[in-house]
Length: 196
Image (cartoon, rainbow, N blue to C red; front, top):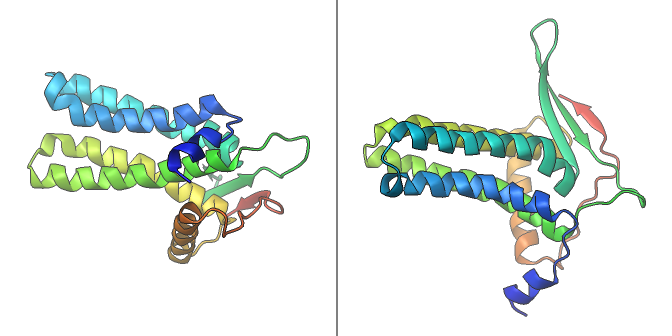
């Protein structure tokens, strides 16, 4: 049983969304890493990476989250100036085309691994004293962690104790990835719109 046979047997119902979920994030990281080698213009590289990060944030928040895992979140400010997090989850039904297990894994792994890479890049940038790039790296961390935070809260139904939610979610994701047959995937039944 090899990883290659597993990848080839996966069924993708949303291949374009799956592709773009990873494309913008990976492209931003690759562009950042290669900027010193290929690009001589700091401003051009900065704008390109920031554009890719922005496209990633928007596509993950508004498109791929809905299609690949059936979740959506946003933050709105009321008339009193108070911030409210709003979470939605698609109800599973027979006439509704849900994403596959493979698409959900790709979504969550991309959502978790890429911010970790940006954090490693942050320390590399800091210790190599490339301070002009620090603002871009902080923007990368901020945008990707914001999406991760929003989707973790959304997955957990808007629970406000983020430390418990994050620990539970990360351990569940790691174990489900390592042993996919041993754990049952939690469904989206009962989750609708939650405000926090």
